[in-house]
Length: 99
Image 1: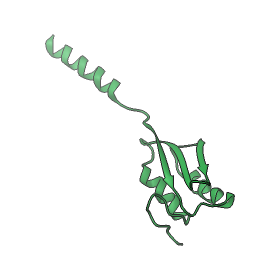
Image 2: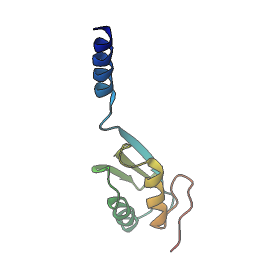
Image 3: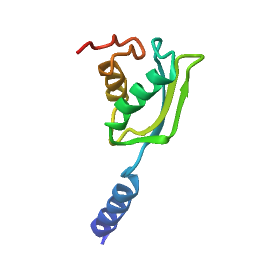
Image 4: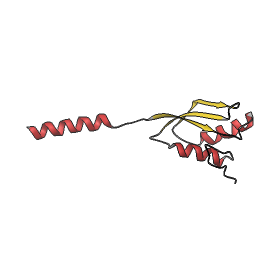
C-alpha cells in the first residue's frame, strides 16, 4: 500500500512538473538597424523561426533594439540572435554573418 502511494505521488508530481511552454522575452541590440527596410529584413529573418510571437515583437529604431517573446522549449535565444546575424546585422555582440 505504501509503495502504491509513493508511485501515485511520484506520477502526479511528474505530470504536474512537466512544462509545456516556457515563454520568455529577449531584447536584442541591433546597431545597424536604422530604417524600415532594415526592420523588414530582421522581421523576415525572425519569421523563419518557430516559437516566436511576432505579434508582440517590437522594433525600436531609435534605440536599435528588437524585443521578442519566445517559447524557450521550442527555440533558444541564441538561435534568435544567429538568425538576425545571418540576415546581415550584428545581434547582441554576435557579428553579422556575410553571405
